[in-house]
Image (tube, rainbow, N blue to C red):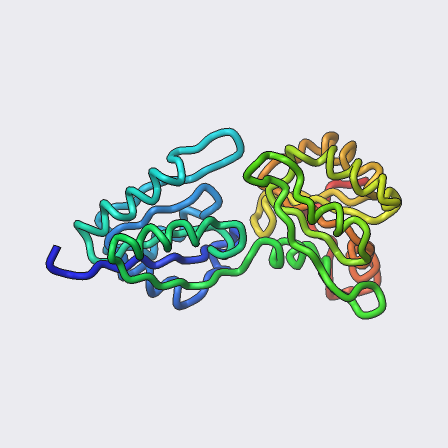
Length: 258
């Protein structure tokens, strides 16, 4: 190899292909190779006219196209053949995106590394449903927690979050929904407002609202599944108040009645 290849990790945003940065679009246009994840909207590949290789390397619950080590190996392998390798990741690469593992592998192989941030689904999906993560007089913070830890157990941070007044946003957690609900109920939060938003920011988005104590039942009745974002906190009630009082804001067409 008589050139130094570069790995660019790009955040593809929460799903809507328009929610990607101009810098990311420019980098896609320069890519020789693109390795993209399951939650990436494939419409974004239209910006990669010059890419010689576009390869799906996505992971979903219970189904991995490639292991993380295999992805790392592909990055290095393509880095020996091509100048610019893009890793296109859903949301933001540094929010539960395993970006650091890929950076470490690339650096160890002598590659340059660049990161282009993306809009995380933790922020954009509640916003798309008109749910503010913070509101003066309601809460002072929000937590973003994964529902899928490396060990398979619930994160200890969920136990702490359930005892706070913060809005709690849980990603990759539908398989753990009942356990999360039980945890919050034990912490005295059974009456706290909750929402689940599937395919947020996309035309086929669906949302159910309720309380912690009944959100599992509502999600099951609506047939919700991954990819979905769980929001727990009294800010969920503001969705209803704002939309009910403003003629400029309409109820989402994808709201599942409750």
